[in-house]
Length: 194
Image (cartoon, helix red, strand yellow):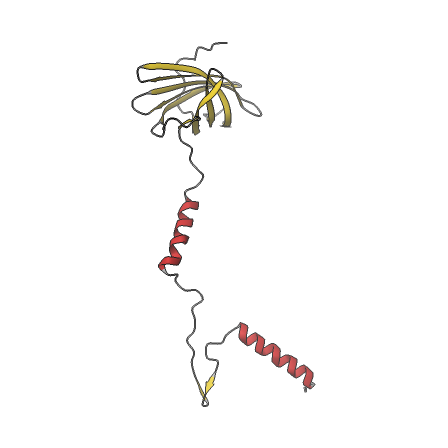
C-alpha cells in the first residue's frame, strides 16, 4: 500500500515524536556501526543534600498526630511538661460513668473526679479537681473542652479528651487524657457536691 506524501510526512513526524518520547537503548549509528548508548536508570539515588528533606518529611509524617502535654498552664506562666497520667479508673453504671484520674510530676499530685452522662453526645455533667503542691492545696471545678468515649455495656468503657480546670470560674489549666480503656473499676464511689 502506497500512502500519499502528506500522509507519509505526518506518519514520519509521528514516528520521530514517538522516538523522542520513548528512547531506544541502541538508537544511533556511527559509520554504519551501531553505537550502544548508556541506558539511563528509571530513577537515580538522590544526593545527601536532596535526601535530608525527604527523610525529615517522612519522620514528621510518621510521628502521627500532635501529642498534647498531660497538663497545660493556659496562662503560659508555668512549665508543666513533667506531669504524667499516673492512674485512671472508672465505673460505668447505665448511662453514667464515674472516673478518677491522678496526674503527678513526682513532687505534686493532681486528682480529678469526673462524672459523665453517656449519650449522643457523651458529656461531662460534673467534675472537681484538687492539686497538692508546694505544701499547699488548691481545688476547683472541671469543664469539658473535648471528649471521646467508646464502650458498650458488655466491655470496659474508654474515655479521653481535654478538660479545663477552673479556679474562680476561670479556666487556668487544661488536662489531656488520652483515650484510655478503664480496666480498673472504682473501689469507692465519689462523693458528689450538688
